[in-house]
Amino acid sequence: MRNWSEHFQHTKNYAPSALLEKAIPAAPSREKALDLGAGALRDTKFLLSMGFRHVTAIDGEKAMKNYADKIPSTLLKLQIKKMEKLRLPSMRFDLINAAYSLPFIKPPHLPDLITQIISALKPKGIFCGQFFGPNDSWNTPENELTFTDRKTLKKLLSPFKILYFQEEEKDAKTSDGKPKHWHLFHVIAQKS
Image 1 (cartoon, rainbow, N blue to C red):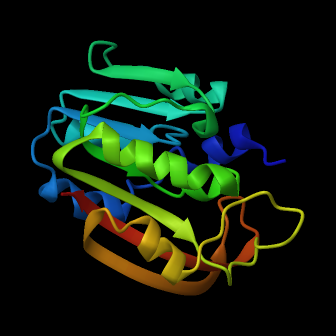
Image 2: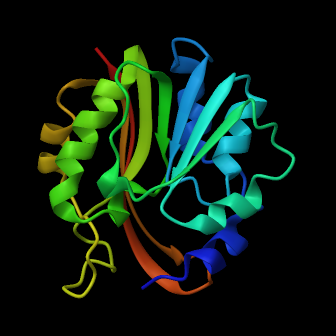
């Protein structure tokens, strides 16, 4: 079990996701955004600073609330809920960000969540996020994480128009400084 409070503490001052920065200009408007797996709210705060009028931040950990100080409640809606239990509203968001969060749901739930993300986006809405590939060093039997190969991921994302797709493998550290081999797919996609 990961210590998410500790992870949030390590990442609270990180710069916003570079993928999110790249995705924002493609959003059809800056009315509503959703930050899935919002953690310490670094991307949530960035979305607000970029002019989104309403941001919903969802995370399964109550510790997320500790990072919401100084954000006007009229702009931010916090939901403490596991992604496996989500029921997203239809046609609500201009942009949905899932920076490094989708791999942390159990594998059977990923297709349903992707379907919900598609439904929750407005026409021409933007999704951005990362998926773990099969060569990731966390891909071991004891980890109940989701790892997706390129072919499966492309099929899962087929309802989208893919704007950006990059596969990356690198050796780097986790937020707590431990070495890790990362196998990632970075995706920006648009609802048709």
